[in-house]
Image 1 (cartoon, rainbow, N blue to C red):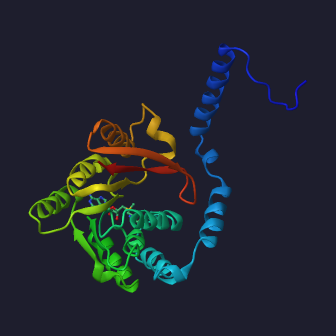
Image 2 (cartoon, rainbow, N blue to C red):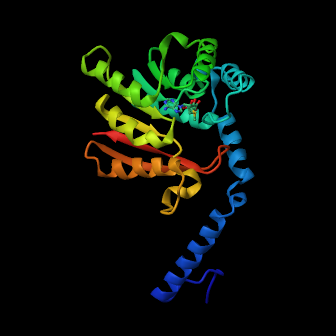
Image 3 (spheres, rainbow, N blue to C red):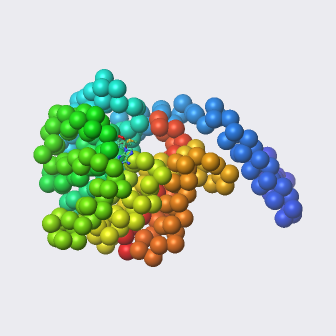
Length: 265
Ligand SMILES: C[S@@+](CC[C@H](N)C(=O)[O-])C[C@H]1O[C@@H](n2cnc3c(N)ncnc32)[C@H](O)[C@@H]1O
């Protein structure tokens, strides 16, 4: 007698048939991006973020965060900042590693920077940005949020700025970082991680954003250089004895994506 409509497969061949039919339906879905948005993702973000927000526990006000996004949009910056929940995740992660120095690559309008700078009252953030217009808007947003004095924006391409920072750390002119957030040109993800490891404290973490890219991370035939940037960073971290990493897939108001987090051993 069966109590449910579910029937366990009886043979191995049946299991593999089911797996391959599931895989085919998933591949079909991934060819139709319309299947990949779901209003529940944004609803859950809105529900959980609003319930878990306790303004009294942080100096960070909703008004400062909204100002940063509105001012960025009014100044023509693209709408590609992290979501509020992702920003709060970054802030909590910085608290977990007790970050005193944080490195960010990719400032845009400083939205994620504002979250990071609010992880503790004395944290210092260095944020690297190649676009001078973005950097200017970010400076205004950061000072509006009251964290301008604790954030240093380094203007220039990450591949040039990071080795300079690494040299300063080596010479003792700058302290090591406890947390690094990489969110810029995806093609250089691995180059950034490779240099960042040397200037991150043991036990510190490196987070690389947008590595899942609607599942294309697992597609061997993709020609998108941003996906190859994600693949390279995942594969190289897997081979690197200095790091231990994992990819977390996410859905939410920023669609289906995910980040890689690696701990420096
Ligand atoms: C996704 S946005 C950063 C979003 C920001 N982290 C946030 O969540 O608020 C990427 C930023 O990286 C910058 N960028 C692109 N290429 C860069 C490079 N080679 N070096 C430094 N920054 C770069 C872009 O100008 C853009 O402002």
